[in-house]
Length: 283
Picture 1 (tube, rainbow, N blue to C red):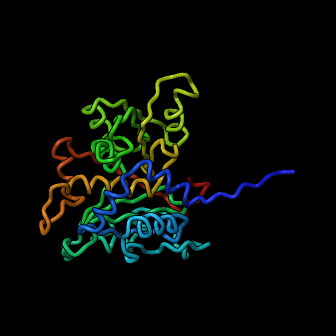
Picture 2 (cartoon, rainbow, N blue to C red):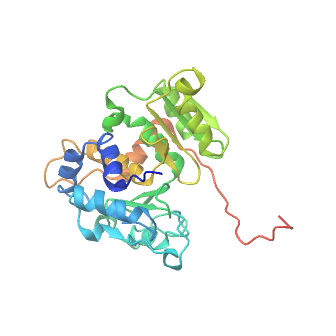
Picture 3 (cartoon, rainbow, N blue to C red):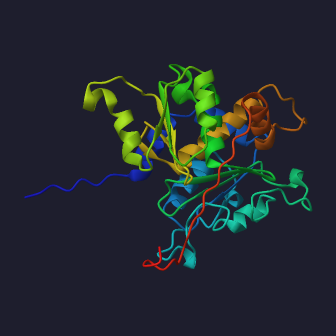
């Protein structure tokens, strides 16, 4: 005979996130002028976003869009990028190439925009009228790790990025004296680094943060990319940046944080091209 154990994935996942972030602080920040628009893209992550953002952090239901999972993803392609998250992109005051729509007043927009893919492990991050590339997002999380309780006590012991991403992470890691790795594309290479000590009797690189060019970001809390984790990381960074801001003053937004980062480390550029519907023989 075999035994079947039924678990509550929502509670297990919530426990993992609560070990990474200060939910009391995020709840307080969420009621002090912060706003978010989260696009679940009709994928599996929508229900988790409902549980975390609305039920746990007290954000309004209007913070969610397309967060009801559908078998066909609502006849959409659930890829969190500028092309397929076009509705969110527009609502964040952006054009299809990620630049700001000058006809929209950024002060009327949500402070943070985010999207998850079909299985909830990849993410898109944007501010009001401001798109954040996956490479910049990784670099910002690395440089602001003190804002994330998961890393605040012991710091980061390692970071890694996939080869097609930009070198934005490299310069931050060098400045912060954090070991940095560039790997082939594939999460298994990040897994090898996170398991270096127990699997290979090597150096322990955890706590660890890693990311890839296709909007995947994660850490050793589940040793996999995690879209909602990235959203809470950015919410934590915004919360920290707004400590000391008096009531009635304008909050520090994503744009201000990223541009300050560029001023210190420089700005890195790269481009990813997705080819779809290509004849396999010709390819």
